[in-house]
Image (cartoon, rainbow, N blue to C red):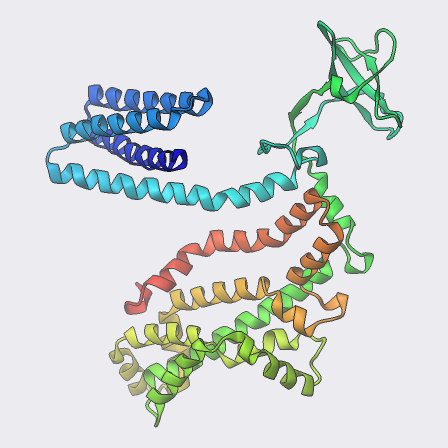
Length: 440
């Protein structure tokens, strides 16, 4: 029952947040400072109520939050209607606020795994399994003048809880018994007093925000020497991605142009059959493809990973065909009058008109080739021919117990494709959603 009440409290809190955002937006739009102040004050009061409920530990926290969210929602709705010119305008503002808040919440949910990936890749080993989890990486403050006897590196600074007083010390050695040898220091970092041996539990490490960038260099150093710090894997991936993208763009656009603009017997029937192949599971064609490539002698080569791209893709053909069909026939007729042939029309007229769709197909092809794991697993056996996706899996089997190195290697693999999508997302969305004249 308590879980149901908490779910209801979260739902009411979200609705109240929507109305609060709508109240602030409508008050700002109407340029009414008193209503702006009331809306902002109500929002701060609601945030304070949520904070007190979450940290109060009361058994009735969920019920309190439900009542508070309900009251705040009613008050925020009244403020929204008060600052709006009409009821319709108030409803429009509320719907817009709900859409914005939903998108923001969804974006945060999708960003959490990526933020966790980056954060973990910059942590020290002792912060990996801490609960509650640490989001901002920190490291222990070290001494500038005293080194650790075991490692020879600068000794870490901690606080020694010695009864009723706390002493600032440096950890000079880790003893086999599990205890730590420490040396008291002054505020300037100089050694004072006598060294002592204390329990680890009596020490509190003094930490400061400091990402451990060494995880990335160490992740590359643990790779086999013949891979040249992973450059061999990167080269294989770039080769596969380049030829896969070129093959997909060339073959899919040619087939799509033929289905969209040319007239030949059985065109519609073959197009239906092409779309029907999208319903065939990839597991059904896996064995026949393997037998074909084995008969060609292509096993343990990169060819099975990019040659099939030159035979088109049903989805890409369908996407490009819809764009080709949206181009007016007058452009094609004018090109024919000027003496341009079928291939000239395709290359000079049609392709420039479908750039958004071509960009979307290229992005999807790059992402698919870059992240392809099943293909290398089936066709490759030589380590020097592995792409990044397969190499990362092998790296996980060897260093799965070291989360920092594993996350650093994963970040290095996924970062280029994220950067690519960040700079090309406009073309991707435009190519998927638009089908008007010239992609406009």
